[in-house]
Image 1 (cartoon, rainbow, N blue to C red):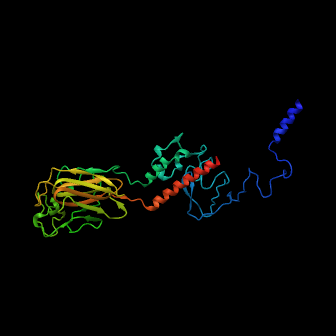
Image 2 (cartoon, rainbow, N blue to C red):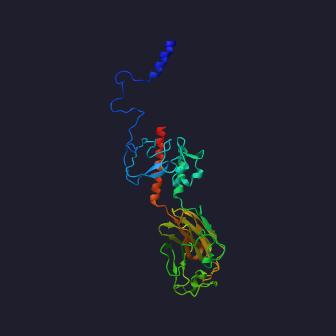
Image 3 (cartoon, rainbow, N blue to C red):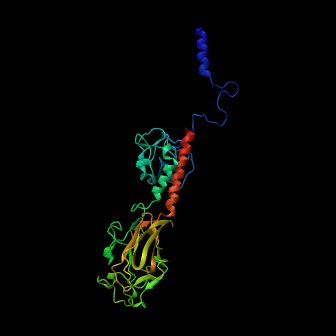
Length: 366
């Protein structure tokens, strides 16, 4: 019995061993499974060199590659893999000195696109898990965070006119988020600013006598009337068809207004003010009435400011009234927000694609 037990132990130690021809070693040219190609003198393993300035992902953060650094995904000296990290390997860049459990990423490894939503990401002991981080809803949140304009008004906010507008001092407090308008076009130079286009209507300058209705202070005095109405004085924008109204569109470049308004100076019935966002979608509208005085002789007590705020950018504003013609003045905008450039979206897409690639490699290794 004792001899049989010894024979069994000896056989167990030999299980899986190859016998017969070729048992003395691996087939020609093959390396044992537990061995890898040797590293060079600098500890690097063979790979494809990239030019200086290229990037690779290190713990989901982009890290610049120096000239000639290989991209071979096999482990280098010290266990580091080029390109993707997180499965217990050593990191380069931010957070490189920290040790972490398999598949867990530290806060410092998050790219800038995700940092703004960090408080909402799933965590394990204060860290982000790769599996949860790559859920579609979180990637979508990252894309929105990266492309969103600076926070001013998260949803459209319309100004409902309540008091007369007699001069620029009557711009509603806080309409430009603590700043001043980038443009306030009084039209007194006889033209509309080049950053705007006007649809429907014409400038009222000469030839209309006392029929023009401009903002009170445009003649230099606040006295209930803008006059005398000579050329280049007390100018406004007029459309004889109030139901058609007038539209002003921002055509500048580089940034979009997040606050856009004008002053309604004449007309009748119900006044409707609406706006279109940077993406061409409607931002909504408001209706107001009860302040028209029925006079077309330049009186200013009925003048009202209409405006809208929206962080996503405002492309155009339109104002109409249900009775008679319509007249407006002091077209203005400000609180400019940068428009995301195509390169920013491309960088975000590349980062998300790299994150997905790291996830696939990690799953394959697991």
